[in-house]
Image 1: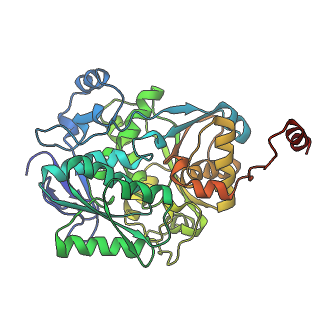
Image 2: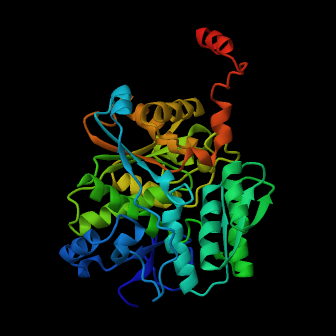
Image 3: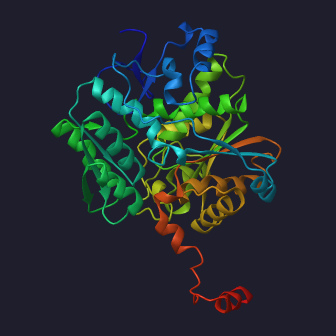
Length: 407
């Protein structure tokens, strides 16, 4: 086996990089992509990175090996890191930043993983890709698979997906199946389809997806000039938390940053198996059978990446907490009205969680804090409309306008 391979996060068993495999057959745990970091020269890497625009493929030397063709790319990554002074002053955080992943091509962080995952799928010569999704994954996979000329199947929980996301998947030409059940039921069906029908799975159990997502950590280090002290991030299926930790750790191991942040994973109270495990100091999760939250992107009761997530958060010396929907909605409005950023409810969970962490003294208000806004608010406009003031209907006259303004 060469110096790039897949490794089980449980027993450590190694597998070839080009083997189509999602979990270790020996112990059932998920896999990580292992790169030969000790063979890389950080000075050469730094010089190479600095010649390219901020994007996922800026860091191609730290991504899995691909074929000779160009990557399947929509120019993803390079998302803005906003200094949020007004919001920071309101909640008591002196150095607060929001990494707005909603500015990716399909409106969420999923594009980072899909550009790598779909490029790998093409190199592996698969013909049909599949995913289960609460919305963003389906939209992203549909877009990238159409660009790569691959057949795409997405499975969504029937009646439980924001229409903004569903419309994207359908417009890009994916075959959409609404499964009578929740996300976990759809995901189980996806995994069975991979075994029995040979479909290539591009949920975050695919080891190449997190490789693209870790580039957001690289970007933060390059945008700030250093790693932050704390990173606050929503948790759904969990792969993104582990991806960020892998990214920060690789930059530190290479000497491209001096430190790595504590990671705080935020879940909605109605879908919080990982947060509950931290509260009980448990090493395993207890799945939530019927998850329920306005934050549909993180409405997952049995996250496939729970072990990777717990390992990442604990390794960083962080923790995971849950926040109620009311606080998520309040945070969403604050972000929009104070910083001009329209984020979906799941993305606002990071700010809602940070408020609790600051109040509890878990995070120091003087620290350099980055919150991850995982998706754009236009992904779920219905949720925003439900919790906002309704338009005031008036006659087309100044008299009517003046009366409305007085009231």
